[in-house]
Image (cartoon, rainbow, N blue to C red; front, side, top):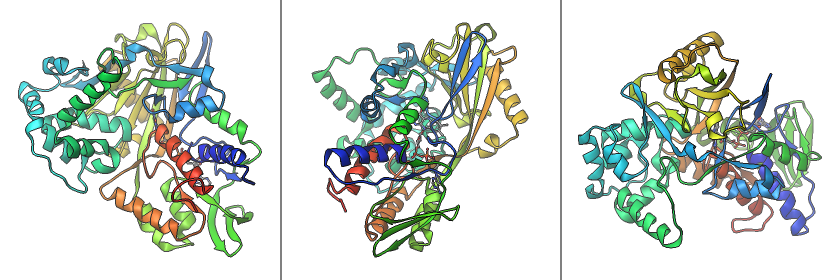
Length: 461
Ligand SMILES: Cc1cc2nc3c(=O)[nH]c(=O)nc-3n(C[C@H](O)[C@H](O)[C@H](O)COP(=O)(O)OP(=O)(O)OC[C@H]3O[C@@H](n4cnc5c(N)ncnc54)[C@H](O)[C@@H]3O)c2cc1C
């Protein structure tokens, strides 16, 4: 996504500004798309659409939707069912609805009365302005340990498949310390933002979960990759793993693992995962290695299962559920794909579930063999959702390096990499390892980098 959308923006901007361009996009795999891929699983009454990676983006940030529109995909955009605003947590051994308003929060048994009162005291907790702090410490300090364990922990695993005790709140959720800094309290900040919003728009009903609607494409997120691929087909080379790069007076030389190379390159943008970026740049300057290798990745296995609707007791009336670590279960959570986009992801009379396993805290669970993984997932689904009967199909998608973990010191590492890049003419790095892991973040960064590389913005070459 990062590489393709940067290439697309470069091509567009070069055409608009009449900048001569000879573009090469080198992809190590046989197919493009990285984390984004949609698999079609045929069924006698239609088909299942299985997302290997992201299942959508939030339209509260415009970048991906704008990109889709620019690629001519406007009529293919689909929005999550309104019922998907309902989200569940598995706490105290059962599914409980995540409250969507302060009133519902005060009535919800997800936290004990004492823990709820502790959350309500948050505006009186003195702000602590530090440079870096773990998400868990931040949440415990502001909201109390029970809220950190039961609400914040699953939220973090839903986005990063990460360990809140290891992740930096400043890097992973920069808005939270910013809210504390500006308003002295998260609750006060939320009230102020709500007031500002309600002046301009009627917000409608309160929702649990993030603001904005979840958006995808009729044929899945893979449709975005196909559209980018089609626009860049002349420039993309697949099965073209880059081994290293070198810099000479007449430009960059990009050497492929196969021994082939491309020379006299003016601008070089590297959009690979941080370990690969480190390998590619190590020969240029060893200083790149430490900060890049300091960015760990979590291992996640996605297990997709199709069922006859009758084989699931739960109504699946929502987005899905997440499981806090303190529950000690073998899954991180489960997305109810057929409920999120009804009629779009599974044939009538069937249901599609996607279960996340592993993450930074329990990578060994993700790395078990297929039989062990599948039987544990089926056991958990049986217990939690009342799933019985055999699945119509199963898929196991293994991401050994699924999502970069923005650990303590992440912002310093990013600054170090960026300042090293500045020493080398025309060199830029991007990708989800640096400034946000959501597809929207990758789309936003790709436009920034494209402008910078073409000399169209501040910080340009
Ligand atoms: C299971 C899962 C679920 C997710 N769900 C969501 C979601 O619902 N919403 C959301 O917004 N985000 C989600 N994300 C995150 C989002 O999908 C990713 O952060 C984003 O797609 C990453 O894009 P990227 O291009 O930066 O990296 P990648 O997708 O990792 O792409 C890097 C590319 O570099 C290539 N490459 C590697 N080494 C080399 C080399 N030496 N030479 C050439 N090419 C190389 C790789 O083959 C790959 O194509 C999810 C991620 C995962 C794994």
